[in-house]
Length: 458
Image (tube, rainbow, N blue to C red):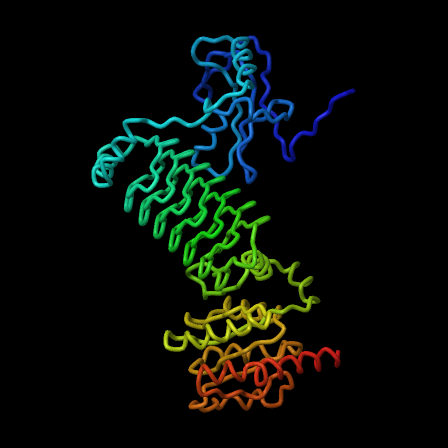
């Protein structure tokens, strides 16, 4: 039978040599000895590291040490064209022989080996270790495969260190600097990483079950195939992080910043907490959603006009909440969102804490177009009134239910709205408890009835 194979999508072949009478010269050229081995393209993308032959075959399992070294590079994607050779004088034939023998069963032949001096120094304590890092800033620590379980490493400086396959289960790494660290396949079960800096960290296939990552800085971290089941990620910064086939079952992502996150084929379940995920940059008014996969969709809606036209025809469960929620009134907001979630709506909050701008106006209008109806808390919120004036006349299909504290008077400019059919009567509430008790009858029901009325008149 004729054997065939399919080259990977986007495969780029190696550069091929061209015969010449004389080698090229000049400042733009360098030369090296021609080694006899295997021509390989080392490729890293969202699927991980692969070693591809000139014909597109995946030989990653044949040269695991090369794959391991490539995985340690602090880069999210690259393509390296090179030759796999033995550097101890072995010929290409000997390399082929070694590679063939490497397929034989082996116990821990390919397990990463750490620098014993580095491990011993780290075990002297964080103070001694950090002092050594200050004295030797160009030395990259090699702690690959080290057993550091239950170690007290709070505040440790492990920038750009290699901890591939290391055992850090139960370790205290709170407030540690782990920027650019390689934790590929490391065991961090139950580890305390709260407040840790993990910028650009390689956490591919890392075991982070029940780890505490509260407030951790995971900007542009690579979490492809990482296991974060039952992990605590409250208020973590996941801006630009890579989440592909990542296990988040039972994880707590409440209040995470996820602007620019890449989330594909995530493992989620009913125990995964995804409330108040911030999808905007820190210098923009905060927009929050309750689903990490919906977050990408919402942000795409805000920034892609073609997608907006498609979604205009879709009836959603989105409820847009507008207001200016000071610290004293945050409990009202949280209670409102919780009750809407309980009723299977998807609340999206826009807080007018920061100054309005033209971009703000456009954003609110786009969010309103996605919503089934809008709840606008006009208590102490002049910005909300101005926004409503710009938005309401142009959105006749979106009911707006205004609410206000009972002790406050309706603003004078409210006369503008009284003859607009989709702008509902103002609901007054004296307390948070009354708002929640009346939410179904006084807020949601009038809005839903108006939705049906407007749909019937179109």
